[in-house]
Image 1: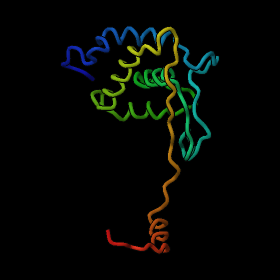
Image 2: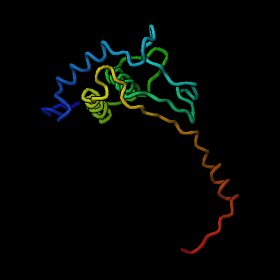
Image 3: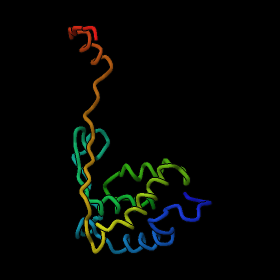
Image 4: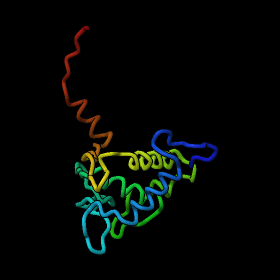
Amino acid sequence: PFEGKENPFGHLGSVDDVAAWLKTFLESDKPFGDLGDKDVLVPWPEQDDDQLGHGGWVAYSRRQLCHITAKSFFGAKTPGYNSGLRRLMKMCPRKGDFRKAFASLLAACSADPTLANGGQGPILLTAKANVAPSVQEVKDKATAESVQMSSA
């Protein structure tokens, strides 16, 4: 995704540095611990064809997020989970902005001192909003409310 740029990652390292880190990271890293034949813990409960239900949230360490992003970036599947990141990668052309953002995130992961020596780094939360009300529901509620208008 960074054709024509000598070093797209600047101070984070060269493309070769990031690629070498990724190879080692993906081959040897188990950021979720020993899960047997599983590689990633996935959010639940499932709702409306998505792994994470409305109003739900999930927490990942930076190491876990880097692992999931790297797997998705290279098209790996997570058994039993239709990863949103993987779906984004499938929708994006090889030179798309999401790919560039993911590659840049992976470069940042490779240079993150909080991930050194197996460190997990900071905890990141992902939250999903509740289902939005229908337009009609909002209109009905707005007409039912009595709001005093005042001059400013």
